[in-house]
Image (tube, rainbow, N blue to C red):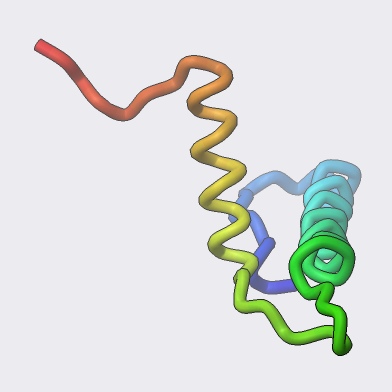
Length: 75
């Protein structure tokens, strides 16, 4: 859970609860994808190394590409 924690200074409990809910949802999505798509094998399931940090980086990169946000400055 600490891997998905966001840093905020807001005192609004509803917003903090939303952040906690989003973090739990992302972790559950990771577990679901690992269980259903990545770890299937004919002889049984094997553990796949696909970390939560890697998934977050991939989500970040994909949303930046789709929304047109780039960190590069071209001259």
